[in-house]
Image 1: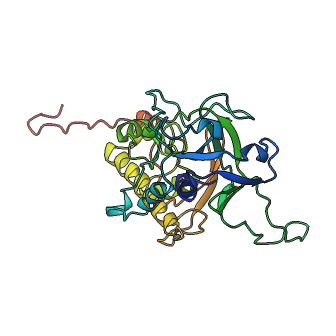
Image 2: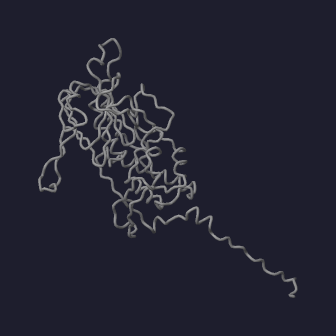
Length: 346
């Protein structure tokens, strides 16, 4: 599943098309009619965690010059896109997040994750936002189509069919593959939980990590770590030397701090690599041995009744922490005082 860095890359690809009108459509989507996008203007794009939001307006909703400020010039949007490629600071931690949300969509103080009021048709409001979730294999292609990399089960080399294709007045086009799309109103997000947002709240994240449950469950909870997926989970636990099933409540504050540092560092470096078209090299994910040469263990882990995800870890580099029960049930050893040399034997 595309994780936060990948969705930020999609956002980076879409941004140059903001301010342009859709002049031709296509695609195989049954839930949304591609023809409904004809003549709409792409006015804004936002990203939160694993979700991308695109705002479209019709001709009638773009008022005549003089009635209000016109849409931001395309050149300014291109500049914002270039700004996202700025050189990152030490450990790749500094990232650009200038277009996380639009000014007219205030972020509530509640704990809602990125969401829209979904639907099959544009909402009856001044703003029409398309929410995109990318599932396991979703992607966005710019000015080219995805090609088959291998034959299918029938032996055919058929190219993937895009769900939606939008051609713009500027001459380029966007092709959306294997993504879930729905119309909604202004996106409601919580940037304090987005691992790639400059508004990410470290204190809230540490509080979540300290819960009495396995840390590998907490890391995948999008309420606390929006944008964090299975690859990031495996890599940061290995780099922090923490067993996936270690209870957060048994880990010391310095170890929780170190784990959170790994989350932010790895995610930011992965995003930098995405923007520079560099592959991400993993140390434990889908590996048979760790960098030290130890044999890696693999198992599907997840909460009872919840989704279980394949997890890789090194039993030697990530030793199992004692549980709270084992600590409380450990026998207390009492030292018998030695007899005083001045005590006479009876």
